[in-house]
Length: 353
Image 1 (cartoon, rainbow, N blue to C red):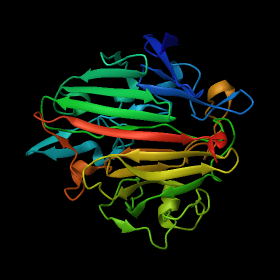
Image 2: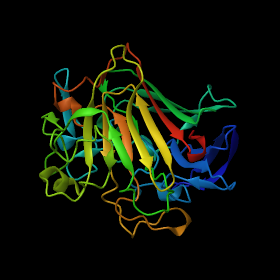
Image 3: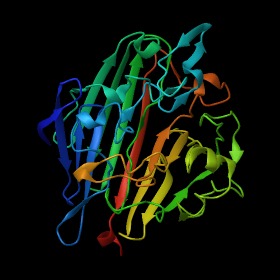
């Protein structure tokens, strides 16, 4: 693993970039601002490499105007209605940064802070840690968080999360990487072929917050149980598609009988012949197709990112869970440890037999 300075964030704090590589020529860079994945380079047959992660060129660009490119988000990923919830009889008002709602942990969530290098960092993996005080963004409990990145010689990106809290508190951590298997600057991802092993999804209201219903994907644009183009139904005259301007919905995954990792999604890019397989321990996965990106957003290499330039497959618990008792539990008790694991496995065109 290689460490080097990486500019400064908007608060003037020096940021460190870490680079990990495997023996097959894959490499990735992470910065400690937001525990953010900066790049993921996949080798080409001609000796060059293609970066499949959307992002920026400097740390400062990843702050308040960035759409969470590549960051770890929390304390509570996704949306919480009216930025409030009730826990053990107490009512909590949390940071509202998405109109009157809370998104991805509030104004100063985990994606906006500087993390520290952890003791489990080594030649083949990087641990980043942070501590958020009791009351931070309105949440109860001091929260200690760890994320470990590892790139294996089987071309797997492992992301493991751990957290402990001094008080009962909601927690929902995920990774917000935007992928385009053709390359971050290759145009839209609508021709990527997606398989998503989910029988149900969560319908949302006009604010893109789940209504509480779990709806079958049968005969809807949300049925990816059989592989098909991401863009096949993205312009359908469907209420849910119209509300989000594409896909920005959580899918309900079948629980693993032992709570372990299971394969939940596969994406294939016909243009590059690359594939990505997603495995997770989480009960849900958010498919977001970069609907809100626009050409005014300038990314790496001065490249503008338009709508659908990348897709996110965010493994997580359900949005607004603290306000839905029927959703899987997201309350971390002080005597427990939050644990979550996700793997992104990459299959390159030259690996096919």
